[in-house]
Image (tube, rainbow, N blue to C red; front, side, top):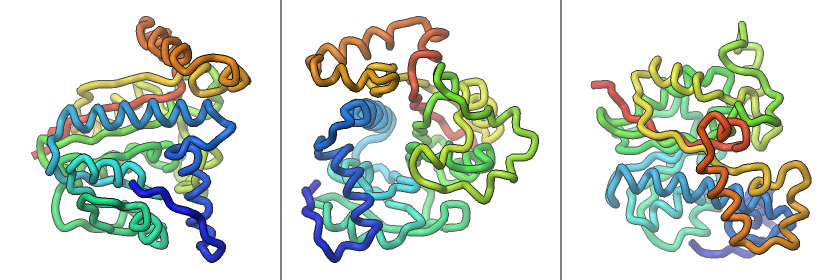
Length: 268
């Protein structure tokens, strides 16, 4: 992936995307908690994709934004389709591309059509931004080949600091339709709990093969723990993450702010 240098004439969407590349890719940030959390999420997502699909497999990256997962997967040898409703980001992604196959299909994933079904669909940090996560997952399942996979990452609703409502307790999710698809944490509507993930997966005829909980309070920089990054060696922070990954699941649900889920499509 090429490193880009911002230009004064860049569109605002490019400049906005570049600020996230500084955090997520280039490591130039004072918010080390975000950088650690993103690195953990990236590692888990790539491990899960490589676990179920070999290079050459067709991968759809939904709401891919500045395209970092698309670019990384293309460089690993996958045939990637980048999707986002912000069509103007296509040229920004192309600016960073070094090699690999990427197709570009802009548009709202609820209404866009693709020429084929995919071996893998990646929905990274998306489902918490939609008013009807059950309908969204059902739509995504229709894009996956029979026996194909969905890799989903999303904040963990059971994390002890979460204050957002459960989707299953909302009587009328349509009241949130006007605010869906908004970026960043300000656009989060629901944070799913593990029991809700299981329920909406079953409704879409998907089987959960693996769930990973990660990013504890230290590694995500919450509760002012980001101040510790100035004095703690990198490997100590990773040791702390490994320790909480070994806790009983009932505790992991409370101390980890993120989850990644591997889903198998059971539809014919």
